[in-house]
Image (tube, rainbow, N blue to C red; front, side, top):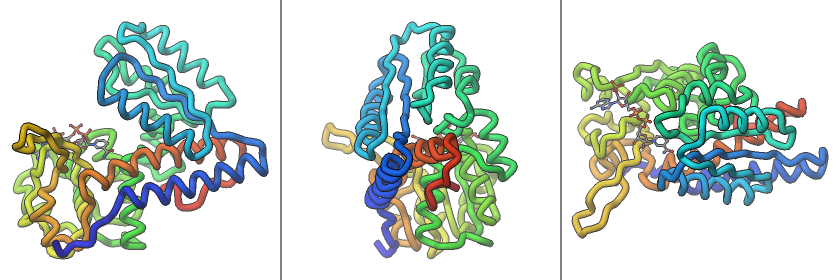
Length: 297
Ligand code: NDP
């Protein structure tokens, strides 16, 4: 391996430390405690793990953590009522409705019922519009984490050629907006893109968010490129067990790239760290206080 390893686990610990320091100052100077409410509907095992981990880390940085675990059959009206009560609760600065929701619930309707100022996932249509027009918004956590790692590694991203693989609303599109905001020349590639290897080969930065295990081989990567691998895919490890891999083939990409994030231990830990950063930002904004430096887009 010749690439520099971008250690998302260590970087996320640093970000959480910065959040914790700021939270302690908010308490000491303003008697304020940021609060995050997470709403989980149903029994999805992966969602349960995420929610547990979010709650634990929220408490570790000194914030208030509230969890609402609702039955899979919960009605839309009941969920809307809960979101309205959290919108009105002054001790709650961030609201996260864990996705995916059971099929009978209208995700768009519910996400858009969250107060945009408390929408720490950045999925509310107002925040999508604000990000798209370069205005102050709540930024989706995964792309924000990728941006922080890129800024930390490169300093300025201005003028770099960035290729984002994937055009989802939660990763690909906001990632492209953020890179554009940092003056990259951005290409968004997807399943209909012609000659994907050629498109990827011109990139100085590749952000892969496709959900296909090890899809990007090293010979698609220009020497020296920075590879941010968002993918989380579980594959057969061959010994009756499974293991996690990204969307990029780490072994071959890491011999060509200038820098690369591992899976696991890259983008994943940054996502929760950015959720905490967003909750802190939301609390500061709600109280007319200066936002934490370096923790927003
Ligand atoms: P989606 O399934 O919503 O989107 C995948 C995107 O990849 C689509 O735009 C799709 O194109 C594109 N795509 C699929 N196949 C190909 C292909 N063969 N060639 C080119 N493009 C292709 O996924 P998400 O954005 O939600 O997630 C992507 C990955 O990131 C997943 O592995 C997910 O688990 C992971 N993830 C990780 C997070 C973290 O914290 N680290 C957080 C969120 C996601 P099209 O639109 O044309 O169908």
